[in-house]
Image (cartoon, rainbow, N blue to C red):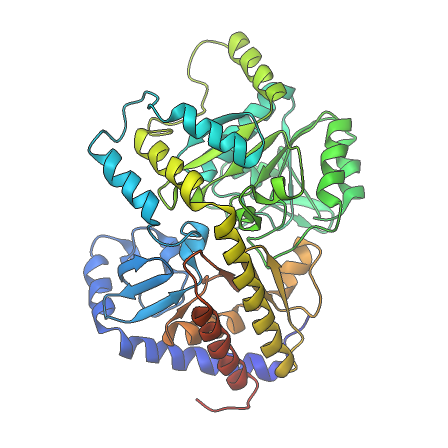
Length: 456
């Protein structure tokens, strides 16, 4: 999986040139970064917004559909789509209408709205699980699932896969060091060693998982159906099905976090493959980009939840926040589930993602690079490996930050946005064939420079 040395060398030259080019093209963003920096570190309201590797942040004036317009007036074809938060396009019309109508009827009241029953039925119809709860973020949903699993099973340990990411859930910040689980050293401010109660396993290795489950002390397996927050790793055929079966044999619950794999289809990877997890989590796009997430669960789990609540010590459970399930969130979610996340929308998204993936593969092959392209529904990703990855360890080895950064900056300066970490692209219902052709063409130009076939 090693990167050709000349490609990496040219990548470093490209980064310097593209950063200078960016600075020259964005004087208004530069001024706004300086002004915002007086009160926001780095000039951004959250530090993740600095991950684009530009010399200063790109400030947005407007985002609509699959188009972003910056404060300097440049118009971009957006394949980042808020890292899935805007997977169905920026401000889908039905969601925007629902938000506007609900805004004058109340935002939050700590009481259920008149849409609650409707949204519950939509969630059950889309994803197959009968019971649901609403949170503000997928991180909150995953935290709740971890707590419920421990309360239900009476077990302390959580199993995650090496290379995973589940938001800010502390229990997931572990990695494999050889065969040993260790807390990720990047985690800030952590007092207790998470590796005492969380176990990391290699993805796609059912034998390794079964050995860990046999100890009988694992409450929950928390996983994405495919690893998407590292270089993308798809499950081997039958792996998730076998994982669910093994967990049931050992009395362990399973949560499928579909925050990114919702790209698979209207019911996510879970419904597309007729899976029956104990828990299901979906954040980011479920309300069209409004901060909202959900977690679903089976009737058996709901009964165990009720038992736990009846027998627990009186007082706060540690699950839920005041704004969770507010009226505005329910209105946006109703519109998104019913009018935006449709089979027709997904057919369009998947068709164009296939076209995009094939176009990227053609450019990789034309430049004789040892890379591949992985796709899952509306999501396609360039991977610096000549074959599909099988584990988090392989994904980590395949990442080359310099080459990624060079490609991302080159695309950005030519008004095409892709996700600033990894090489992930998303196709929205509003993405066009012209958008896809534009990305493929600019990507091909970037490879020509990286391979020494063209000069800047």
